[in-house]
Length: 365
Ligand code: GLA
Image 1 (cartoon, helix red, strand yellow):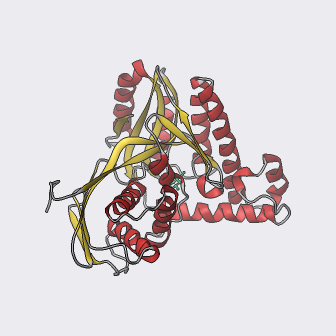
Image 2 (spheres, helix red, strand yellow):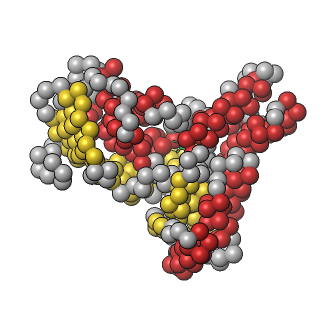
Image 3 (cartoon, helix red, strand yellow):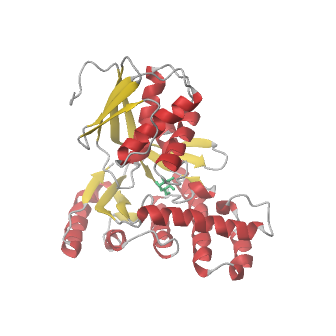
């Protein structure tokens, strides 16, 4: 079994995502504006008899075979997404999950900040939901997928990726309040502009530990504010003025993290307005501001991403750019005039190569 074939009865196509604005806001109870993309994980499923499952990844050229109930963590990272999904489903529907076989293929580059992992967990959940008639809602799937990241891979992620992948629609951004989970689809028709990603193809080791550290630092900022203002339940929704009152009580790093979160929340609100008013140049400027905050206040950028953003500033036709996703590598998101996309791609890739002796990969959305 190493190719797509007719023995499979169900095929799921689970997209990756970009995020227009609202980075690192999901676990701070803020608003985000992600959108599914054409790059996706494809998974085929078939029922089998017995109490085992067998999942093959064509991308990793690797196979996982397990007893359904075996929940010990694997040393192979991608296995743990599968093990987590199967075991979380067994906990809530112990009699419904039976033996199965699946084969995974995908076009989402791993570690590029395009949510290949949430695409996998959400795709698995949708597939098993269909295969065994589980009747699980999309919201439940999103929460299970998040739990899998927390408990089986140790990433204390927010809920943005799972919601974008399960509720997103083509050419629409999902305006999601990550605290209440209220959501609204916003039409994004850009007749004259195009979103383009530059994948730096780097992923610095720091990314996992630094992500967890940002979750902690922002929780500390909130608890300091709550010691006087318990009514503020989420850092992203604290007014800037209240943060200033607490500045002296926070160490410098914690203050910078909180400042970034509060400013980024205001940028999301501005971008939503700009999209409805077709103010794309102003929106581009906000992308640059977001990158500045991510790089100098939240400290989740890296030299390669800073370079990819900076290099666009002198190119006419680029409205704005910023790093995207968790950080420390992966992609930048760029808003470019359609007629200038080819020349921009050529220029950015060649400058990046001169600077780092590395190829960056453009992805036109
Ligand atoms: C990763 C996490 C998300 C979110 C982003 C940053 O993609 O999985 O929950 O926090 O980083 O916005």
